[in-house]
Image 1: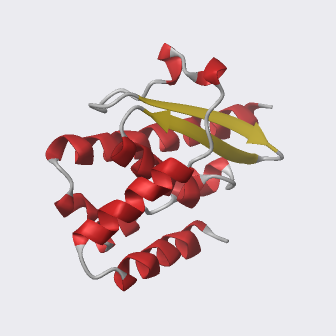
Image 2 (image 1 turned 180 degrees about the vertical axis):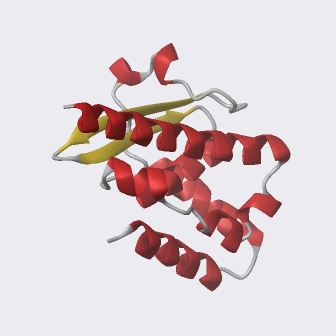
Length: 142
């Protein structure tokens, strides 16, 4: 699936839910279902700056594609990072770096999060795109 196809799938999932209580429950469940990150990756270097909660993000390049794993000490934040991983993981650095991430606004997420959570979500996205740019530059040099 492309990045846009994954975003459209999330939009469809959210359209089925009639209220924000259901949507928050869904986000929390996504966080609970997120595979655990290896403890060795819960390092200060992997902490995302700009998040009120602690969020660890680990990135690996395999077969030309980036794969993300993450964890957070807050369940909603863990669900939010799970959405970002679903959309971006398994794509090339170039695809990730150039992706237009529209689902956040389209599902109304940015207007239903507290300002600190919204900033945290943007920090997660920014960090994932920075990793993509760094890996893209690294692979272009070799």
